[in-house]
Length: 219
Image (cartoon, rainbow, N blue to C red; front, side, top):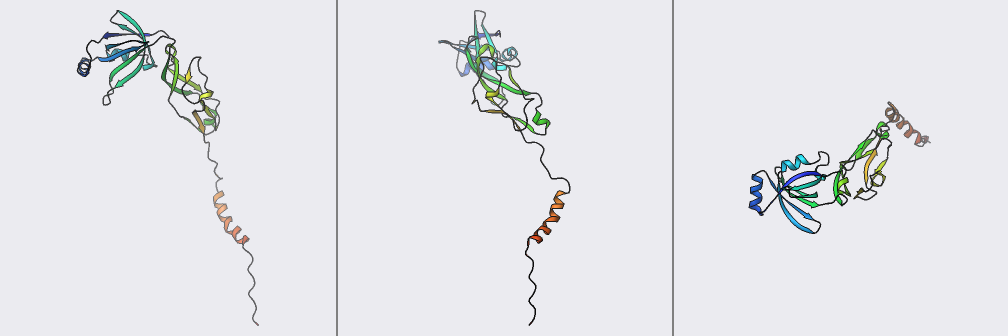
């Protein structure tokens, strides 16, 4: 996938006061680093960042940073800091990244289809909505989907069962369960059975007692 162009500017002043000034002007500080090159202090519009992001990949978007029209650098978001009260973006770290560089990412996981176990009265549970992956920067998927139509009662889908694109690795144990189909309709006794069983209980108890001995006669 081709990188998405994002315009950024050089940031000459640094420090808390400068960062406050930037945020007051609807901009945020950022840093570009990696590839054993000097780190570059940047500033950008958080609105432009959000608008430029792939709506499905979000922070996994692969960027082409246009630095004041003088330099273009391919980059991947390494870290984002948010305001704990407002949720607004406060700072972004970009990592210089070539398309084939393997990067860590969190990717959405979801299932498709209605599994056989659910049709039989069972319930389906996914243990994770996102999974950690390693993947080339330009190939990070928006979502990992798995068809669960054939899963029956008691079936478990594990990491090792996933059909993944070439080059994509899941950073979890192969035995990690992702989808579990459990339960089924409770087996209940037929209507009237409990009452019949209750009525039969005293009779069975009486039958189990030894017969009473006759009282001895008077001499």
